[in-house]
Image (cartoon, rainbow, N blue to C red; front, side, top):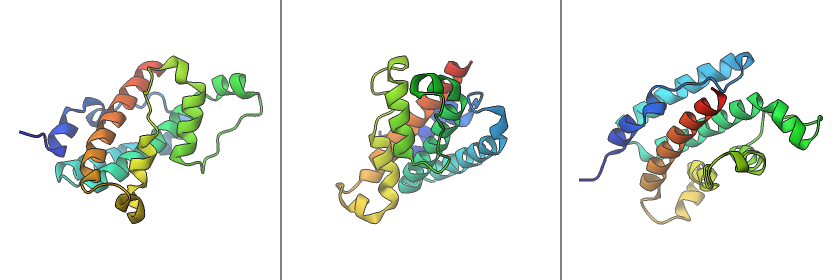
Length: 159
């Protein structure tokens, strides 16, 4: 029997009990937003709302990456120069590019796949139409697993 989105979400321990220690203390509002959005993601998954789960997972991943990168400003400044700053209005794709360019050597290959931004962009109907039917089902499952892995790894990295 195929796992439901709800059962997959229940297996994702870091989605259910996130440790957000990688988010800098001064970004408490971001931490609160992440906790709220993770609750909404669990609700969407429990109702097997695949498109909602895929899109919300991408939004959460963007916020998680932003928080992680903000916590690594010192490291990024050394690698990119003292004038480095992180755009607060950057996109998921932008944060993925920064992460994959500057942290690739610290994490396993393919840790944060570019496809995550494509899945989040399923919010646009023309993006969904460009994929085969059923894309939201696969995207939601993969995004839950990516997000769970990222939450686990970032919490351990920061710890």
